Amino acid sequence: MSIHVLKQGLQTTVQDFGRPGYAHLGISTSGAADAFSYQIGNKLVGNDPHDAALEITLSGGEYEFTSDVCIALTGSEFNASVDDEQVSIWTRKNINKEQLLKIRSSQDGARCYLCVRGGIDVPILLNSRSTHLMTGLGGYEGRALRKGNVLDTYQSGDNNNRVELINVNEILKHLDRKIIRVIKTMEGDWFNEDVWDLFLNENFTVSQSFSRMGIRLEGNHIQSSQGNEILTQGVPLGAIQVPGSGNPIISFVEHQTTGGYPRIANVISADLCRVGQLKPGDTFQFDLVTLEAAEQLYNEQMKFIHNLSAS
Amino acid sequence: MTISSDFNITPASDHTLLIQFGEENSPDAQKAVFRLSHYLMDHSLEGIANFHPGYASILVSVDIDNTSVQSIQKDLQQAWYDSGNIELPESKLIEILVLYGGEYGLDLIHVAEHNGISESKVIELHSCGEYYVSFIGFTPGFPYISGLNPKLETPRLNTPRKRVPAGSVAIGGSQTGIYPLESPGGWNLIGQTPIQIIDINHPENALINMRDSIKFIPIDEEEFERLKQ
Image (cartoon, rainbow over all chains, first blue to last red; front, side, top):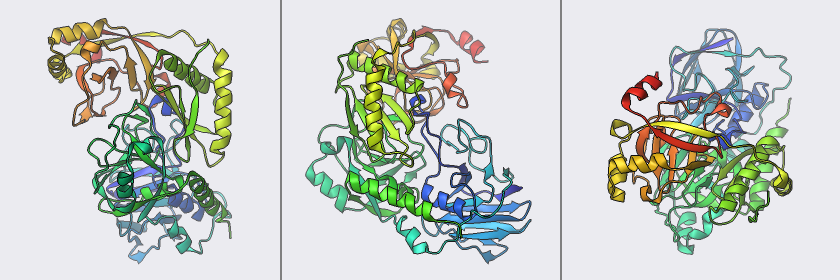
């Protein structure tokens, strides 16, 4: 089975759960920006949660399939339709051969996932199918899809693994991007109490400088009291780096592996999916939690995905 | 190998641990980074998703879907202990041919002016230095090269360039480095090498690795063009 791209979106890439193991060679993990929605989409169509899918950013495009196919759209609402019949998000949909799937613009967050039964068939490079856009590694020729591209999918086996979704409200709790929870880390003490008050109590806005590498925020200027440079050191995913300009940058899935800016805090793992849904113009607040709470929240999120079981 | 370095391990986020071998990038701290990095390359420890060597530190990210940060903390302490006996292999000497200045090194003039010396003196000092690679970081295959003559130190650009050509040789503060791929970058560009540093699909075969000794050798435009092909 193949998927034909009839109209391209703004930035549609093949993604999976990422490419760990190469940070010491300067290669960050990449993978789905909102791994929560991505995994649920795969479970809906009966795939392995880490099969490759399409990550669609801000606008969708049009797709046609060469055989009857089962798909799911998860993440943000993009007003999708098949031959003018609306396709609901967080559900499974059977599409007939040569029907047209239209995915419009985001009505909500930055990304949605198009999961196709069987998973997207692109070569595995360095143990992953994910696209690392900055370096042109992996995915479909290392880049975003364009009009005229044709993607193969894997043959699917039986359909017994697929899950029914019952409670979309429970899902949406994980994706509330008005609040991004963080823990204090690293150079957290370089920032005075009044700077921390500002950091936690005022709104931040996502700037136009927004990519899979990093998300630059606007609003309050956050100033360190102990300088703007650290000895170059490894950068964790979700680190909130503060350059001299005072506009924080959230390091994201294609982040540079080392860096020299002080870090005030780090997004908790359970909220990285929310970061993956932030889009330019969004406003939100940071909320401080403890390391123990962060670990518990991630465990609960993993359990939630795991417990979506076959019906 | 005996090392009198500190070993301090703390959480850097809910999925990473930061190992620090002291506050400064001392020779002992550098040896400690080499020693544990080498051990982690040779023994892929279960539950470690990634490790990021830096100056006097290694950041370790944990596969928290399958293991806990606490158990990896213990494993890393053990790894540090076990790595005490490892023999590091001979480091290689890599010669990097560089066409300095002009359109290939747009900031050569700036580096010269900043340090109050001539452009040819910059080239002379840069190409007679003895260097080694502290670690690979930032972007795929980018070597952080130590050993820059203090007379060449130049702060990073105020506004990073959106695109730096692949092969660019640059100075950032007290470091020198090579951009293996086209990428954004804020270091001062002083030249370019025509030699391919990395094939992104085979990063493990990159020309330059951690611990390698580096020598920069000036070449002229004719040789640059010949080697570029």
